[in-house]
Length: 417
Image 1 (cartoon, rainbow, N blue to C red):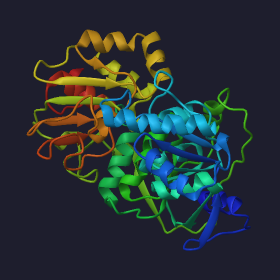
Image 2: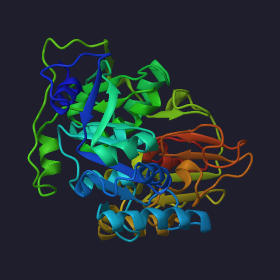
Image 3: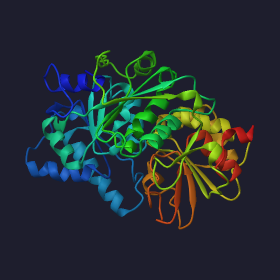
Image 4: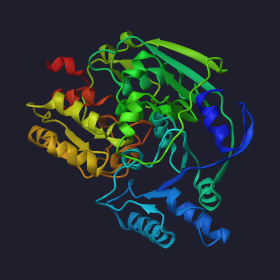
């Protein structure tokens, strides 16, 4: 079996599972946020059970429109907050919280071998920790909160092997954008994307989270890495939970195996209006921009903030645009503050926000007007995703985003050398 199949088999009480098989799976963690939790709560209450299956296996995070941007978002957060208190589930309030997919690994709530389900499509982020993690609808999450189980079809696994040594400014964001550009937004439809190879072993955990996070942009059910020394080092001191290290068998059956030479991959830019519409930075051309966003559950971790600060240090944000930096959690914010990174951004003329999803989904903290163009480290560039339907989003890694903020156009960091 593959890594994912082994995890699912262990959670449904079977010795073996195969792609296409329908199973009931026990969950280790059930997640929702201020957009999706209220729907799940209403459906849960219809069941009339009075209690959740396990308060310590349910997490709610107010991150999409929090701190509350308006009355409606305040009502949403209030409903979630009251439910969390009533059922004594795990809840992270504003001031303690961060973007859900940043803080759950950070706080040691996910370990290898877990099954994690969340009412958010980017729940697949936790696959970087060798967990089977996937997004589901709020009604499915309501049932998971009640029973601790989900119903699903075992997905096939596609193996992606990255050989070679990455270039200086190339990271997880570039590898996943390159992959999506090659296979398309439905290239891994309802499949597990298993990432392997020496280039993957060289990636930091923050970069692995980025890749797993965007498996959904290729239609993937999950994105997953095997446990290695970096995984163990990341978990050390974060959790006391014991975990099982599952690995794909040498003779595991894959739907397909796709291999890339990492040394030949440049920093990538996804043009409007699909993550698959990618070009290497050398072929972007001269595109003036109005805004840069550095953050999100995709690239709001400390490695990302460090990388952007390294590029922008001692320089100024171009007078013709806004640069908005959003650390992914309070810890990331504090660590960046201690390292002097926040000062670098502020001296450069960037705005630094409290942790929030904010502009990524067109929530607030950086909405685009008609005709405006934005370089963003977020995960989606669909029509109207960050504001007006006539605005444009270009996805890139933090180094490209920072360089673009300085030069006023989409540019690679090597132009600032």
